[in-house]
Length: 399
Ligand code: GLY
Image (cartoon, rainbow, N blue to C red; front, side, top):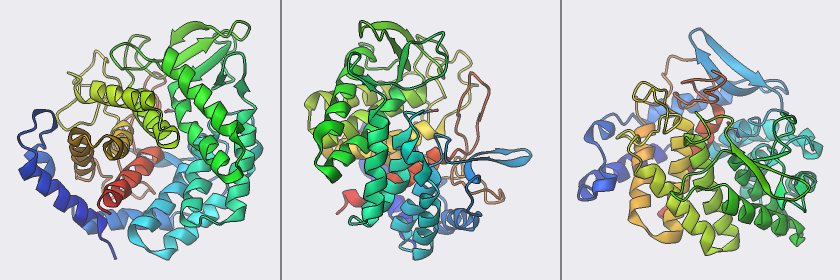
C-alpha cells in the first residue's frame, strides 16, 4: 500500500497549472516531468528495512565510487535520524515492518540520554524516541528517555550567557560557542515540559531562542553559523563560521536550520517574533540570486565556485519541511508552493539515489562539511529524514 508519491505527483501537477502566475514560485516543467514512479521510492524504502541492525551500524552517509557506507555508533550527532526515517516510512506506508525495525534501532539510542558532552541531544533522541512517541503517545519508556535526555541537555545551559553551549572542542578559539543548528535541539526541551509539566525546560528553550534571535542574524535575514560568547560578561565576543565558506557567507544548511528552528519554536510558544524571523530567513533563501531555479541550493550561497559548486539536498529537504509548517501558520501560498516545488524536485531522478546503489538511503547529492572536504555530494541520512517528514507534512496539510 503506497499512496504518498502519487499524492505528491497530483499536487505537483495541479500546481503546475495553478501556480504559473506566481513569479517567485514557478514550477519548472523540466522538474515535474522527471517525477518517478511509486515503485522507485518503495524499492529504496526496502533497502532501509533490509539494512542490518547493530549498535555500530548506524548509517550516516555513503560514498558512491566505490560504494562505502559510513557507519557510526549512537554517539554520533546523526545517529537518531535512521530510526526516525524508519518511523516516518511506517507513517507514510502503514507497513508494520518499518515500525518493528524502528523500535529496534530506537532502543539502541537509549544510552545517549546521559551523554552531557553534546548539544545534539535533540537530533539524537527526539528524531528517534520522539518519532516513536508520536506514534505511541502513551509509551512510558519513550517518555522517560526523552525526559532524562532533556535534563542532561539542560546541564549545558549557562545562566549568565542565557544559552545552551554547543561544542566542547576548539576551546582555544571559542569560550562558549553557539551554532544555529542548536535551535533544532529545543524541540526536545519543549516536549519535555509537555510530558512532565516542569517549565524549566520550556524556559531554557525560550531563553536560547531569544538570545539566538538577538545575536545570530544579519539585517537581511541570513544567519551566522557560530556566535562565541564571553562566559564572564555573557556578551558576544566573536561571530564566526565552521562549516560555511567564510564568516560573511551564508551556509545553506545554516539558513535551513534557522528557518526550521524558528518555525518549530513558534509552534510551541506562539511568539510572533519567531514566526517573523522564520519568514524573513525563508524569503532570503527563496529570493537569493544564487539559488538555482530548481530551489536546491549550492552548499553555501556565496561559494565563488558557483555554478560549479556542489549542491546540498539536505538544506532543500529541511526548507521543504519547514515551508509546509510555515504555510500552516501564515497561510502564505508562496511558502506552500515552494515546499511543493522542492518536494517534487527532490522526488525525481535528479536527486533520488540511483536504484542500482545498494545503500540504506533515499536521496543523493547532500554536502556535509565542505571546508573539511567531507561528505561532498553524497547521500546523507538527515536529508532523508527531512524529506520524509516533508512528504508527511504535505499529506497532513490536506486533512
Ligand atoms: N549540525 C551539523 C551539521 O549541520 O552539519
